[in-house]
Length: 535
Image (cartoon, rainbow, N blue to C red; front, side, top):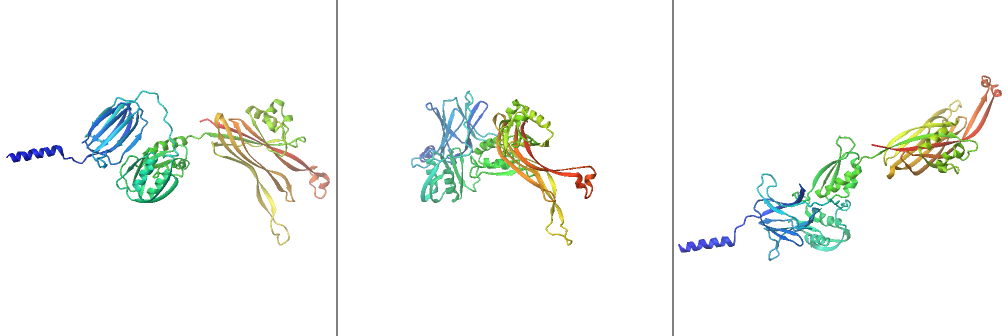
């Protein structure tokens, strides 16, 4: 009987010094939140069996939570935050005396810029997911909001150069060396194994990672300063795993936005252009990438997808016949009074055979048009208007088509020369590319090409067409007018004076009529007025 009692005591003693543990609870994830005037750090577990001890340090303000019967299999990491006063939080797995990781203990540390009044609460077996969580809560400080520093969207990882030379090296050791040298944290799955032989010199960090991992069948992405490596076929849910968002576009086509956002994608990021109506206009972008990239992607899309202002471009083509003393162009100093001539700038001192420009206020334009309208030899050819978007070209073409009688290559069997008609276009082409600048200034890139009939040749009176062109860049204020002058053409004119009826008699009619030839000069004036359309 005494022996049985001794055995029972011995078994009880063994159970005390060597208790039986079940599988440790897993720490699934950790995240920060901010709402209701409070800030939170939330830890999620896959079970309720969690033990913890908190330790506080006053200088620097630090809270350390030792989690017992908890396993974390993603390695040590540290993450900085923008939740003032929380500077950063970290997860660390302790090591045993033989330097092997302890599988049932995890240390979580919160570093603050100043000590907050925090609480730690473990909630288990909740009715809805997440069912088992630990909440560290502290009040949000009452401070004026400071604008967060902007994220450089065109360099999602640190701009660093890598130079390495390895032969048959363990890939895990290579990755640890690279990330350690560049101040990054590394998370590896148990399946990351193998050897690599590689030699790189002064290549970018992202290119080095792509080169090392792609040949071994692995992929990687970044979550802040944490490099996460996994199999390409691995679909496990991890912080920073791929997500998909669809962004609607109100004003731009998806093709105009895609180059800007694709430059900041992670190696796994993709984008597809879609149409909400099934037409050729793609007004949706479906983006698949890591969650940390979506804030930058959304900011880029919001910046680019804005209503583009419109500009109305009013044009007047006016042709005037020059006076005998205006061989170098219109003499504005004579045609208009002195006060009005001051607004015409260099058009007054025309140097001949040269296109000249002047920027005119609306009142000056109105006065000039009144002067030209009083001249019987001035004609308004066309007055078109066109509306275009900012930074989009506007094209205006006005003119006429003339049927021209031309001989065919071969004569008829009776020796007569057959003729046919061909159409010849005589046009004025104007291309304007407007761009709105600050202070209601409008820059215009202008290309003008002018054709005019300057005479006729041959018995068939085939027209002689002369061409002039100009290409210029100017800046005017909203509503001001640019006047282009100096487009001068010499024209041969033929006149016939005859007596009625008698001049039309056969054989004798030539005694009652006379032919006259004269030369004249015509100048084409182009008035271009851009006006911003207020939305």
